Structures are given as C-alpha cells and as structure tokens.
Image 1 (spheres, rainbow, N blue to C red):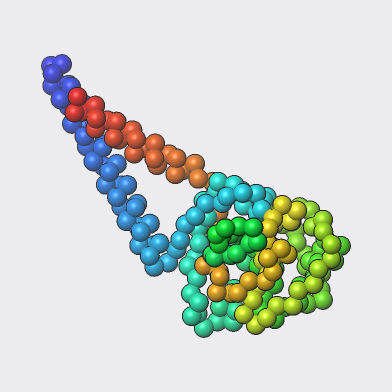
Image 2 (image 1 turned 60 degrees about the vertical axis):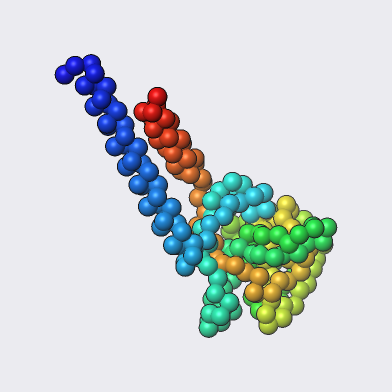
Length: 203
C-alpha cells in the first residue's frame, strides 16, 4: 500500500468514526428530549445547602411533577428530595428554583427544638444530617396544601424556616438521583474531538 493510499484509508476511518460519534450524540440528545418532554427533567445543583448528600455542580434527575395526580399529598412522601419552582425569598428580585428535602407534609405540625426537628410531636431521626440546626426554636402548622422543606446543610440553607411553608403546587418534581457531571464533560470533549477530526479532514 502506497503512502497516498494509507492517508486515504486514514481519512476514511476518521470520517467513519466522526459520523458514528455524531449519530451517537444525536441518538443521546433525542432520548433526552423525549424524556424531558414526557417523564424527566434535568438540572444542576448550585450552592451548598444540600451537602453532604447533594453537592455543588452535580447533575440532578427529576421525575416530573403532576399536580393533578390523584394520590395523597400528590404522591409526595416525607423526606423526599424535591425540585421547587417560583419560590419567592425576601431580598431576591426574582423567584428562585431550589432543591430541598420534604420535612413536613400537608397538615403536619413542625417544631424545631434545640436544633432538632419534631414532626407531629415526635423527634425525627435524621442519619443523613451531619449537624443540628443552630437556631432559635420555631413552630409551624401546615395547611392542607402546604409542605415544609429544609436543606440538609442546616446551618447553610435558606428554606421554610426563613420563607415559611410553601404551596405543594410549587413542587416541579421529585429528585430521583444526583450524580457527578464529569461524564457530561467527557461527552462534550468527544464532540470537540470529532469536530476537530472533521476539520482536519477538510484541510
């Protein structure tokens, strides 16, 4: 095989690899689009209010919320991680989207005594929480359409202790998993490499 033929074969292999990568990326994006429209949503964690269980920069996968779901409390359970929309916080110009944990369900009485959570008169066992809240005692009685949410990083979270219980309709979905997002960086690197190979083929 001559040098010219070898170069031609290499270009052919690169082009095939590039087209395969493009196909895989389009398939992946198509699946994501369908999931996002009908089933799931995706987002990223910003900040440290849910540490150590959710960390800044992680990807979160959200099971979409159906406000018309005919289940008790619209399918929410105590201690679910949830994504919230349109949360208004004093001092913020615009409503915020937040990730928090459900501590109280509609009709619950939530008390914070000596930094520990009490739900309907019983102290809540929280093995996922590293430190108790350093704050004055508080009591909240939830209405039939309200939930109480808190961040896991109790001393570094703005939550229902500050802005009060929130309407259950403000929940956009349950957070079903949170993962490190390095694989996304790998995907984008793969795109860049593929595009670079294509550019080389055109030179």
